[in-house]
Amino acid sequence: MQNDKLVIRQSEHIAAKLAAQHKNLSQQITQLYRLVLGREPEPKERAAVSRYAQQFGMANACRFL
Image 1 (cartoon, helix red, strand yellow):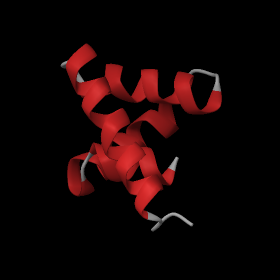
Image 2 (tube, one colour):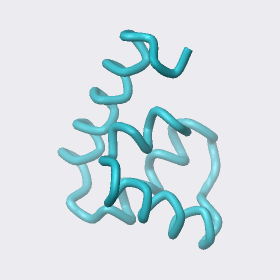
Image 3 (tube, helix red, strand yellow):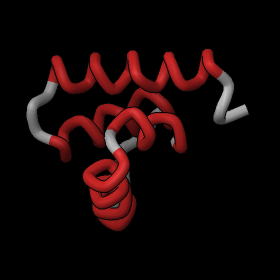
Image 4 (tube, one colour):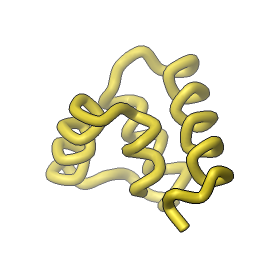
């Protein structure tokens, strides 16, 4: 399901929207957690997702969440 074309496109769309709204990666991740999980990320979560996004891109971080 994570490799479904719709999921990939939506993840790319969310990543682009986050990038347009927030220049800072940490702010993008915080907003992503609010959108997807309805809560703030824990510091460990923010750090882990930040490392993942830097390595694989924000669209992939959106997809895995």
